Image 1: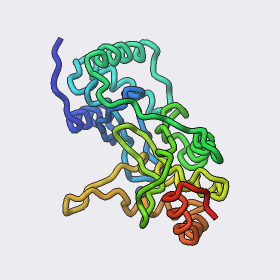
Image 2 (image 1 turned 180 degrees about the vertical axis):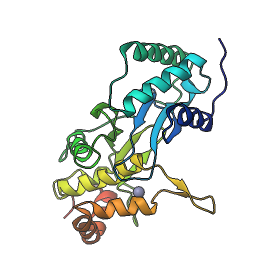
Image 3 (image 1 turned 90 degrees about the vertical axis):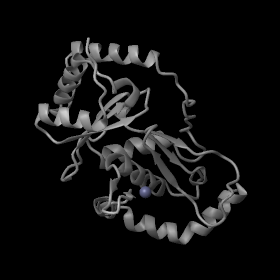
Image 4 (image 1 turned 30 degrees about the horizontal axis):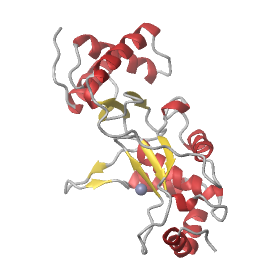
Length: 250
Ligand SMILES: [Zn+2]
């Protein structure tokens, strides 16, 4: 059996040629979802994105290359891949994962919250704004509340973040209180899901741009964009205070 070392670019080139469709391959480290396809957003010039576990897929055999090609072709056409294709890919993944130690501890996931149920909100965000983008609900990024307790920052607040290697969205736990409207939490989630859907790009100077013009345009199109920015402006000081004291907002 021959294997070749494949970079993200090699995979991109191979799949783009064999599928004759634009596609970008990105390596990640998700053991939970080592193979995921993100279809292109409607009306977007961004290509579809295939996320592969870098350790599992960096030395594919010819058979694995072909299997992944078949799998992607089916999923891109909205079909479910043949059971045989799935099984053979699955056994390759399981085999490879055995040799890859789970170095990082799996992130702690906390979704229930005191005031807001993050999973329910995330499902709503995905079904209303990312139709088809993340495939079945199971393959969307995971969401979790951030660490509880007093925050050290007195000047700013990072309300959400998207960690692409873990495919994980974290929402600041200060938003988990009844004084924060549900639609505001949904908007913050929407912003982070948009990061998962539209990967960052490099500008001419080689800097990574997370908020590309397309990102900003899509954000502004969200029906809650205006009231969310207004709500944030009015309440940001109270939120920062609430986070640093670890007490409810007043
Ligand atoms: Zn952002």
